[in-house]
Length: 278
Image 1: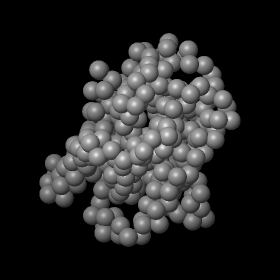
Image 2: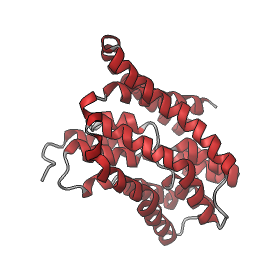
Image 3: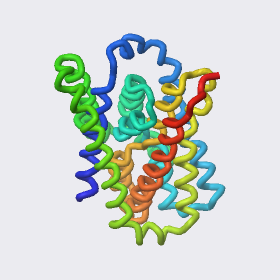
Image 4: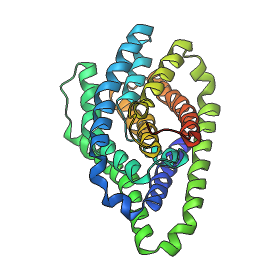
């Protein structure tokens, strides 16, 4: 229960903090980001799930554990990606657009992709409505509030922005520690193959910014960090609804630990990289 509360606080503060960092001129030039948004869409809902699927089959991961890893790979749009965009010195406006796009699309596409993976029939309207409401209140509204604060009361919002980021960072560290202390012993029992497959899946998800050779460092960092952070709340919800096995739920949480640790390293890489544009 505590880990859920911390993840919710992380989501709210990350999106609000991202909104506080978006400049009006960046939003005004949104059309230049369309190719990036299209690439991110196909990477996260097409290329990445396929890569992870074949990696899991190649490694011979157990069915229940691999279902969790595949579910995480098919669940982009994690709100905490906003914090990592800021940590990587990415473009806040692009980061916000990417999270909004992926989170909006995952309400339909993630359950559909997972249903196809399981051999099911696809779309479920009740599930879509529930996911839409969760995404709206945990991501859309905080981002909007951050934007409104930035434009209508900058004297208030500018000084608190660093504190919001510090609070998000605190929630992130606390969530990792809770995952380790609460589930670490059980997660280790999953075996090295599961951990390796999760690390490979996270590594694949962090790759897309590498391929945009002619883009700026800020654009490439934003794409990689948003793609790297998956929606753990969505993955957990679908795992609870469709599988209801402790091994699967535990693997989702273990994936989250690997994801946050590797994403922190990636953010440091982008933050410190000097020459990116070619």
